[in-house]
Image (tube, rainbow over all chains, first blue to last red; front, side, top):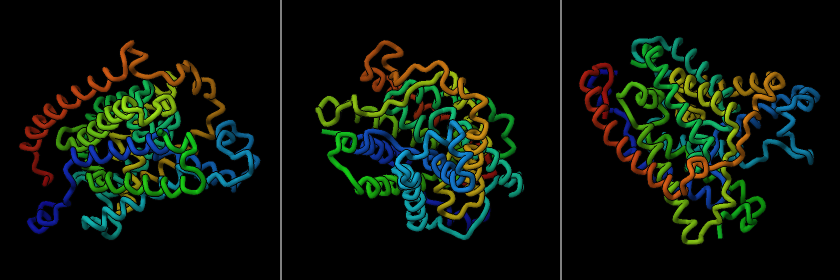
Amino acid sequence: MNTKSDTKQQPRYINPYFGGILLGLLLLATFYIAGRGLSATGAVKLSVTKIVETVAPAHAEANPYYSKFLPEDGGSIMFNWLVFGAIGTLFGGMLSGVIYGRMKKFRVEHSPKISARTRLIAAAAGGILFGIGSQFGRGCSSGAALSGTAAFSFGGLLVMGLMFGVGYVFAYFFRKLWI
Amino acid sequence: MGPLIPQEIITGQWDFVIALLIGASFGFILEASGFSSSRNIAGVFYGYNFVVLRVFFTAMIVAMVGLMYFSYFGWIDIDLVFVLPTYLNSMLLGGFIMGLGFVIGGFCPGTSYTAVAIGKIDGIFFAVGTFVGIFIFAEAFPLFEDFYTANDLGPITIGEMLGVSNQIVAFVFSIIAIVAFYVTWLIEKRVRKGMTEYKFE
């Protein structure tokens, strides 16, 4: 990480304020077109519902949460705005990765102070927490914190404040993972 | 005029083409800003990289101020724009859990997709984790169904909650953001001086 040859290959990113303006304009365009903002976990929620429905249809129908998302007309859950958006996100990330030369073979990125294994456990734990939290929060960073707050939702602001606030409160305990 | 889809100005299969394009732009911007790296993101909690705050707050105020202008010019019917409803108890807990997930996992779901896209295995673990988390939530849902909908305030806006107009809210947020940009820039400079582990551009 610290060798000179690596310094030359430092990833190049766009200016964060420029990135923010682009993201803000995209969000505004999304509001203008769809009447609602961006989402990331919505597609995961529908995919999980689809998997459970495929494996155990009766169980999915009996569960009060999955059954909210099962289409009444018998169409596919996956043929949905949120799912197409998430597929797009993956491709957009790939495109940027290719253009800026960050698309490389599979690897684990972690602080030199922890092992790859520790990083993977932490990543999975973080993902599980985000999965659970996003359902209570009615959306994740994209759907609740960013899009919610930008459309002046009070709940969105709550989620945003807590997400960053709790992160700061607990940062000390998890500092070994990062610094 | 807008929003287009709720008023059926655009209909049919175009929805999905548009969703794909919006999603692709979203992924591109996130990756290009450096959000495919958990270490860039987690920097916001330790003061060595505030890229998250810069991108997030800039995007938020651009969209907020933009919505107000669109509404003022009559380009969008603001009443048709979805305001996320507030379920006080559930959202407080959700925000708390996500905050923990954020500092432990270093991604949020959207950013983890872009990490997956460029071959980060930790991104894959995080993304799979979100599936597992939602599965756990849904399976346990009957236990806390009442909690999930308790204290339902409906689609209440920040302005309504504070008794001011949303134009004022957008203005105040913009001021807060600019102050935060400056303060975090100072903090970042100091923290980076003492850090030898990482190279920054």
